[in-house]
Image 1 (tube, rainbow, N blue to C red):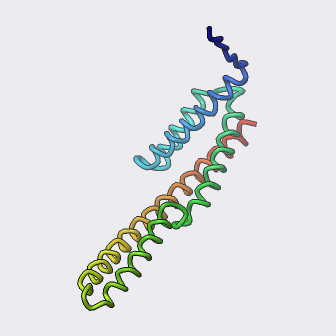
Image 2: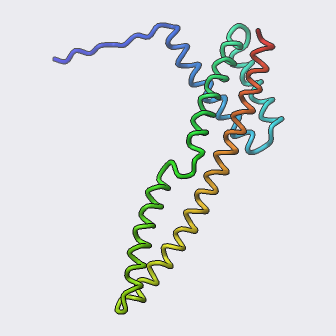
Image 3: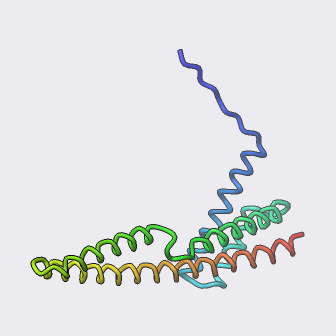
Length: 162
């Protein structure tokens, strides 16, 4: 017969988990609202959400945690801002290998046409990689700016709440 153990969390641990989820939810709502309707509307909705969900004594703690999580996201995105820190490096490496092989084939008389096709395909993929890297770089830059807005807003509210 199996023995089943129940895990019991204290009220403080349960509240901490809830706050982490609500902080992430509030930040996510701000980001979505900011992308759709602008900074003013997103700020108003974020503050309304914070005051309704964590009014009173919990507001300062909530804003402090929002500041910490926003700083974490900014630091993480600053690291990921480098366009070649992900699958793009593997994609670029495989393109270089294929281009070298295509160049070798193009230098041989009997497989010149195949080599030219491989090199031209590699150039088309290089353009696609360049576009994907530029889009990723721009998106990460926008997200960093939005998280900085959240950071400033939460710091301002934290200072006014304490």
